[in-house]
Amino acid sequence: MNTELAPRMARTSRRPSVRLKWIGFWKKLKKDSFCYLYLAPFLLCFTLFIVIPVVMAATLGFTSYDGFGRLRFIGLDNYIAMFTQDVIFLTKAIPNTFLFALLVGPGGYMLSFAFAWLIHQLPLRIRDYYTLAFYAPSMAGGIALSVVWIAAFSGDRVGYLNNFLLGMGWIESPVIWLQNPKYLLTIMIIVSLWTSFSVGFLSMLAGLQTVNGELYEAGRIDGITNRLQEVFYITIPSMKPQMLFSAVMSIVGTLKAGSISTQLTGMPITPSYSGHLIINHIDDYAFIRFELGYASAVSVMLLIFSYFAMRFAYRLFGSKEEL
Image (tube, rainbow, N blue to C red; front, side):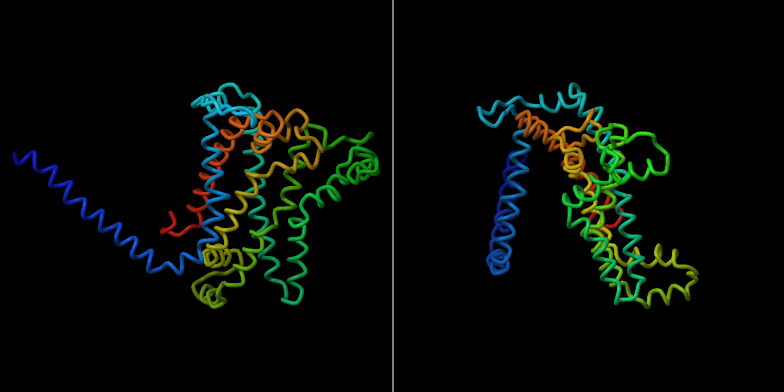
C-alpha cells in the first residue's frame, strides 16, 4: 500500500513547486514589465527575422519544395543525398569553403589586430585618417570590387596586373585571371583579406584604447622587456570582449562570403566551380534550380558549421560564465 501511495505523493509534492515557480515567474514579469516594454521592439524583430526564418529553414530541410507546388515531406532524404550524392557539395563547396575560411578568417583577424595595434601607436591627430583608410574598403563593398579588383585582374592587356607583367617581360600574353579556375580562389582570398577590416577592426581599435596604461608600467616592473610580451600578456587579456566580438564577426563574414565570386566573375556559377562556396551552393539550389527544400538543408548545415566555429571563438576569448 505504501509503495502505491509513494508515486502519488511525489507527484502531488511536485505540483505545488511547479505552480509556485510559474507564480514567481509571472510576478517577476509583472514587476519588470516596464523593462520588457523597452525590449519588445528588439524581441519582436529578433523573432520575425531570426527565429522564424531559422525554424522555417529547418522545417523545409525535411521537405521537397519548388516554391510553387505543395510541400512534400521526405524526412532525411535531403541530408542523405547531400553527403552521398551531391558531388559538387562534397568535392567543391566544402573544400573551397574550409580553405577560404581558414585563410581569410584567421588571416583577416590577425591582420585586423596587427594594423589596429599599429594605428593605435600613431599620434592621435593622424590616427583617424589611417582608420578611415583601412575601414573604407569594407564600406565600399561591391563598388570597390568592380572598380579596383576587376580592373586589376582584367584579362586583357590594359588590366593592371597583366600590363605590369607584360611590361616586365614575365609573361608573353595576357592571362585571363578571373576565368581561370587555377587562380580564382586565390584572388578571392586576396580580395577578402583586403575587405576584412570591417566592424571587427574598429572593435579592436576601440578595445586598445580602453587598456589601462598603468598595466604596462606594472608589467615592466614584473619583468616584461619588449612590446611583443606586452601584447601577449597585457593587451590581449585586457580586451577579450572586443577580441571575442571581432572573432564572431570574422566568422560570420567569412562563412557568408559568397557574393564575392559572382561579383568578380559576373556569373552565378564560377568556372569549374573553382570559387564555389557553401553559400553559392545554397543560392544555386534556391534561386536557379528552385529546390528550396534541399537549399534549406544545406543552409542548416552551414548554420551548424557556424555554431561550432562560434563555440571555438568563445573557448578562446569568452569568460567562464559564457562557456
